[in-house]
Amino acid sequence: MISVFGHLNPDSDSICCAIVVSDWLNFTEQSAMAYRLGELNPETEFILSQAQCLSPPLLEHNITDQPVWLVDFSDLEQGPENLNKSQVVGLIDHHRLGSLITTEPLDAWIRRVGCCATLVFDIVTRTPDYQLSPPHALLLLGAILSDTIAFQSPTTTKQDRETAHKLSLIAKVDLDTFIIKLLNAKTDISGLSIERLLQKDEKNYLIGEYKLILGQIEVSDFHAIENQVPALQQEMEKRAQSEGLDFYVLMITSLFSSQSCLYFSQKNPISQSPVTIENMLSRKKQLVPWLTQKLNADK
Image (cartoon, rainbow, N blue to C red):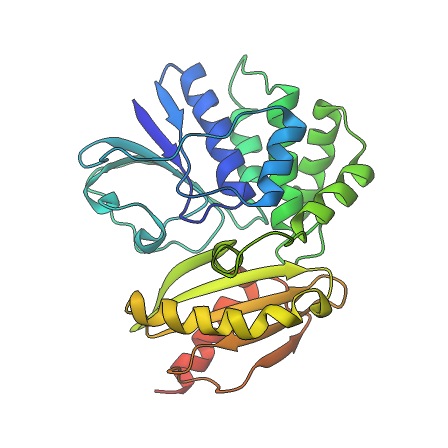
């Protein structure tokens, strides 16, 4: 049985792609099951409820020497324990090629698109006789709209837009209406504890010699979260110390102004004060290169 999963602290793309890819693998007579590597965020719960699909179970079994298929990541730091000891048989991703090293050849697709779901759609629809169901089309649509921030992100490509349109037809939903509902769910931070809010969308990275976590919180505007920032900064310090990080970076993004405010844990080589950057929406395409440049300049 192939275990299919996305990264730790899963976002909508990693959950939705795992579900569709596992279905596709089973269709191609490769026994597979989708899993998640953490709790769902409110946006993902919204997408699953709209598609009337169940959440994948939490990955709890030991994957040492077991076949696994990765979606939406290729960094060992973002995966489960013993990932480096598993048998990675497949990979579908839209990020940089990370720290994953395999012992055997694998089926792998990595494309420069705004969302892993865009690539998944292209792969599964090229499979003879495979029919993407309306619920699964809605999952992929939700993932694309989430990752591209409804096509506002600089990571968005023509293929993402065209795929989203095709998926809306298969799912039989009005694209504009669904976008509004999804963005409302995406920026809903009500009821989340400080710990959960910080974990809502964070990823582990190894940039050069620096071990760090990059977290992102998307809000309608900065006023929606300003009262919680001091507590978030305290939690960042706690996490940086308890997890042996060089530092922690929190990216709070205002979808209204297309700005991001960057907060850093204290022991960092970049800035001791928050940094606000215009037209920064993407952690993958904008924050990671920005940080990499700053860290290299510090040497």
